[in-house]
Amino acid sequence: MCKLEIYAPESALEDIRKALLEMDAGRLGNYKGCLSYYPVTGVWFSGENANPAIGSPGEWSREPEIKIEVNVEDANVEKTVEAVKKVHPYEEPLINVIQLGKR
Image (cartoon, rainbow, N blue to C red; front, side, top):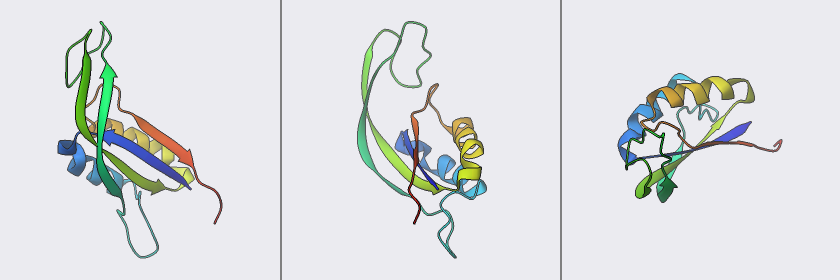
C-alpha cells in the first residue's frame, strides 16, 4: 500500500477526486474514494523555459494550495499517478509516492 500526496490549487480538487475514484484509489473496506485534504502554501521558482499555470517564467510564485492524501494499492500506483497528471493543471505537478508499512 502507498500513500499519494498531491499538491494542487483547490480549484482542481473535483477533477483530481474523480480521477482517483476512477482508479479505485482511497478504498477502505466498503468505502471508496476516501481521501483527505488541507490547505498549504506552495512556493516555487519558474525556470526561464517553464510554462507555469500560475506565475511567470523567471519569477518566484507563492500560492495557496491544497495537499491531497489518498491510499493506493501498490499495483495501481503508476496508473493512478498518470491519471492525476492528466487532470492536474500544473505543468509539473508535485505528487509524492510514499510506501506504507504492512498492517
